[in-house]
Image 1 (spheres, one colour):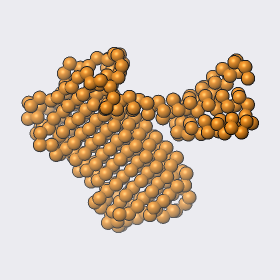
Image 2 (cartoon, one colour; image 1 turned 30 degrees about the horizontal axis):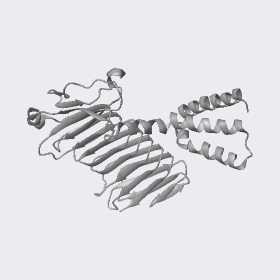
Image 3 (cartoon, helix red, strand yellow; image 1 turned 45 degrees about the vertical axis):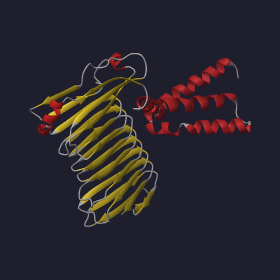
Image 4 (cartoon, one colour; image 1 turned 90 degrees about the horizontal axis):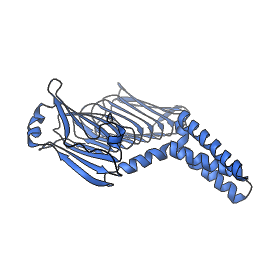
Amino acid sequence: MNRTERIGAMLLAIGLGLLLARALPGVAAWWPLGLVVAGFLLWRGVALQLVTTTLIALSLTLAVAGPGLHWLAGWMAASDRGQVVATHQSSPSMAREWAEVELLRVVNAVGDIQIAGDASEPSVSITYRRQQAGGRVPGELQARYDATTRTLTVIGLDPAAPERDRRGLSAVITIAVPSQVAVQVENQVGKVTIARVAAAAVSNHTGEVQVRRIVGAVTATNDRGAIRIEDAYGPVSASTRVGDVRLSFDQPVNHSIAARTDVGSVTLLIPTASNVEIRATSRTRNLSGDLQTVIATEGRLRLGVGENIVELAANEGGIEVRKR
């Protein structure tokens, strides 16, 4: 195979890979399969170099256009990487105002976010790290309080700011709050952890979401990353495009639950004394645990009189439900 043919094969594969990653997001998760096939053909010595080159280029394109790119972004955003360039903390005067706050809203572009309730001394801390030259670090803590709605908004790296101001920066946010505060998080890249607050709503793009011991409702949406919810005592809604969803409850469930993943698995651990009707749908026909199969792709389980509906769905992955 000459140079022109090799370049043509690579361009063909790259274009096809980009189209597949956009049209069928689940395909990107299978990018290593192309390398496996190409390696096998080379090993057997029966493949044309053109076919092998195409498979390798296609696989690497899917890796970059799909989960690989998001994994790299999450790796770059990890809190223990990059040089610390600034740290901003809340003042004692803000701590005295927490008694009035009903909703904490946190907005960030890149960086991990950790929020914990039951704090004896509420506080906000933001650590800025630089991965490369560029970016503009805020000169002070970006926080504002709206007395009308009783909402405190904390901003790490503003996603609405010009890209040149955010380039190479990450903002790691740690907040301690009173347990009666509800929390709303809007993050793009990074891990989000929330515990022991009144309610939690999380919108993330890339990175794991962990929520536990929430008194009220929990809503978690993710694009690329797992969702873990433990001991939520209000309605739960969890959805991710690529990643596993795991729900675990230590007290009987008497509220609605909806959990969905396009590529990944759904696991539910639920007390036998719960009052729910569980409906599970797996397009890959992978149903396990205590689910009773209705048809190949659907399973059911009723606990108590089944007053509350639990909807579980996985397009490309399995669903496991176990009583505890």
